[in-house]
Length: 138
Image (cartoon, rainbow, N blue to C red; front, side):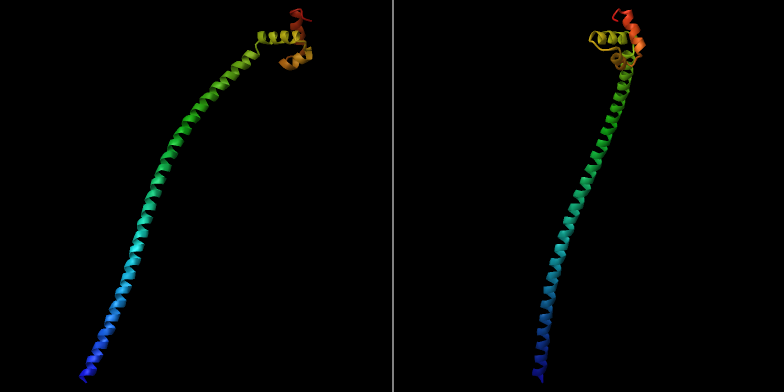
């Protein structure tokens, strides 16, 4: 009977040793899995930090571009104002009687007809004839 009890205890100890070995094997797998997850988490955190830095850079460059666009817009507004003023001056000069008289005289000397000169200057044909008579070019 002692032998049977001793055999049963030995078998129980053997089963217990097998269970402990299986437990440690699973524990080792769990540790490896946990270590892998930890590495993945570290990589994810690194990516998130890089993305946050990129986002900060984008925001900074966006603000710089925004400032530059505002400066360019102001410069363009100034140029528009200047060009409008120059166009107004050019219109005033091109409508001056002296310039129109010179255009009419030079056009007639080039052989243009009174109708062609009227279209070119936007004046009436009678006005052109009057100017040409005054200059003795008719």
